[in-house]
Image 1 (spheres, rainbow, N blue to C red):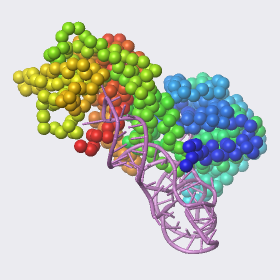
Image 2 (image 1 turned 180 degrees about the vertical axis):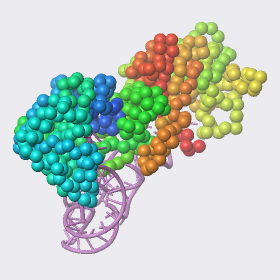
Image 3 (image 1 turned 30 degrees about the vertical axis):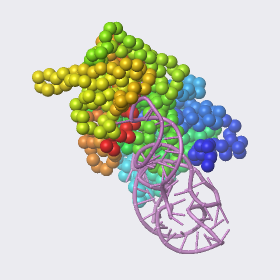
Image 4 (image 1 turned 60 degrees about the vertical axis):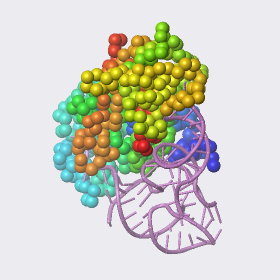
Length: 556
RNA sequence: AGGGGCAUAGCCAAGCGGUAAGGCAGCGGGUUUUGAUCCCGUCAUGCGAAGGUUCGAAUCCUUCUGCCCCUGCCA
């Protein structure tokens, strides 16, 4: 039995490279395309790349792979920067952009042409597809494949100068149209896009493709270990081909790992965007979204996401992780760090008939297992609120089944007195609107006298000194374990009850000072945080980040 | 003869020829002024299948099976 965490395959590779003196420093990078918001899957890549750099004393760059102006936007750049920073990572130096290497990339394209390894191809997209062949059959050479270097140089210059329309031609590498790996069938290096780029403006009308950009960007930045997801494994021979055939300053290596999939969750940018665009959720940062901004607004601590990424490991085996594991990480982190408080979601008034006079101040620790977090004061008054579901007239319920307040019996008010329910007041419809109770003297912080047996402990709040709030309870966005799979429409799996809004909740007075970004545990109810979007000075809105673990609900 | 990748418990995942780590979930019990936390115990005679090599195989060899990815001027 070992108490050290075993290393995953990338850690093994890096350890070996360092031991072999193949590298003296580890340099990684997180290279998102700014075409959408980051989600939990990206969090895995972020933790991996930044984590590896941290672990081995190296550096990690944040680099935007912005080679496709048609799909990208500054809005996404800003959101991604915020998310990475929030997750707790600091990139090395300035933020990098693939677009800042466009001049070099252009020179290298020229280099390939001069070497006779690239050519301008005027096949239409449809023709090019036909020439490419398919998985079973080899492709055939483009009729433009063997034009002279001079002709290609001139043509490429015309492309750059904007003399051709979009789609009229592309620059291709001359590799092998019969290669079993489709990526090697004369891949496209540059295509014409006459549009404004969020970083370079109107400087260019030709843009490099991913394959012609990524490895070279890595080389320019001195990346030692270029880590990407499995679907890029087929691109590695091409990645290496460019590194071999271009005067690059370094020879980075690409490694692939399996992307993260979560059950009950969709993580395709397209589908997340659809949820936002069609209004199924309240934006990219809706608390039900698996986006980093959504999880942040929901109240998931960055540390919990990091812990989760550490828990799931890194391998090359495609896997779908149980969301329960993410939820465990969230609870685990919150349990440790969240100050405790009490909040009654569905208030039922309790009148303590034998309590007269002013409020009595109860003192409770902010955290039951960490005295250093201090104490809080709770006003105990004649009129209180308890949770509607914490009271019943049904005296037949067993003590094991109902550990709360039953008419005629006792219950402990958390951090305060033990009370006995004596009577109920009902409205004309028979609904209980008030419970009359008596407190048992001298039971604050003390065991009850002989013969007084409280069934359990319930939370409460003063009816006269509290803070009103709205509470939002969330459930998983999808009812289907794999809403993404097969030919089903993922929208059909949407959970209609994923959001429940409760107004008129009453929280302990100290919560009036709650701040956005802080997490609280409402005892017996779950973990909550202020909603950053809907909270205003005169209206507190709490999101339930996640409920407490409930071992009892499914059993009895 | 397309190419690439992957198979260890319900879900992740260690293991690298010496007799199946750990986590999540589950189950049983203890503590508890949160039905939480915490603590203890339990959970693969078995590693996709079949052969083979070996004193010894999840690890090596052979064959087979299943799943994922690749035919964007996306990344």
